[in-house]
Amino acid sequence: MATIEAIKRSPEAGIVLQNAVTTGNGSAWNLHASVSAITLYLQWSAGCSAGVITVETASDPDDAGTWAPLWVENWDAAGKQTVVQINGALMAVRARVSTDIVGGTVTVTGCAVKAGNS
Image 1 (spheres, rainbow, N blue to C red):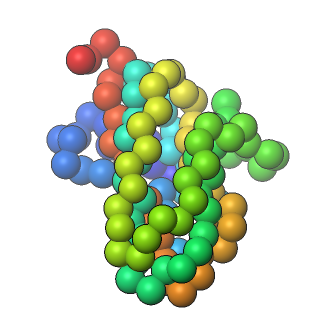
Image 2: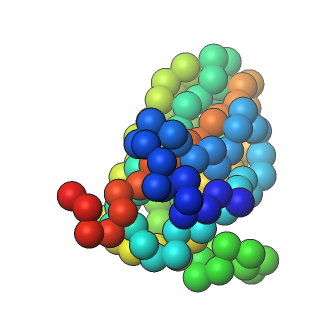
């Protein structure tokens, strides 16, 4: 699980939530409600022809139940990067593959703005 310690590093040091996957919940990013905004980068590999990522939140990064959806991003084009920006204090975030990735993989990385920084 990614922790708030990673947010204290340089903005170039991204948090990996999914790494070249075709299915799965991915890693939970434990934000402790200490950020004011997050940006997620979805990199669809060459060969992708379908798939959906649902960005979700929960109060506990270990929650085994159903997380609340924040954003749904449909596959757009193979080899393309998609950016998702979400404002607000969140406890935990994950990027779940809600429809399997077909013909390739997806990698999701994120960065955040600490609350109080602008």
